[in-house]
Length: 102
Picture 1 (cartoon, rainbow, N blue to C red):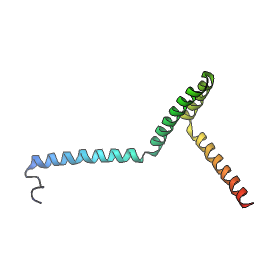
Picture 2: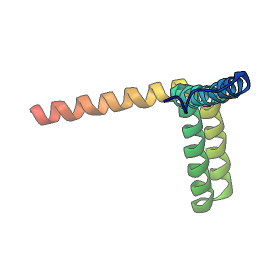
Picture 3: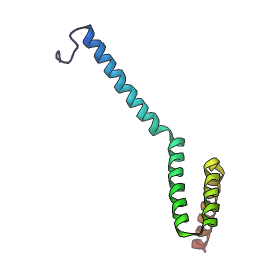
Picture 4: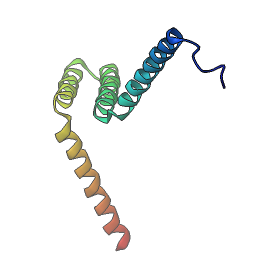
């Protein structure tokens, strides 16, 4: 183990600085992974871009423009849209559950 221990003050400083850099990188990576809000936003942006491109390929220009405007509205304020989708999923699940019990 004595080979791993710094031999002088300069080596100790270098070891300390390297450890600080590694810890900073690790904490930054963990911070990014734990930043769910940003990750969700990036994922939503990516999916909206893909959907907008597909709509533009498949439909006429006025429809593509309307879809793009809707996508921009979702980007500006995604919470109500997610709440609406979640509510819709809950209602569908309740309806399916009632049908299966009847």
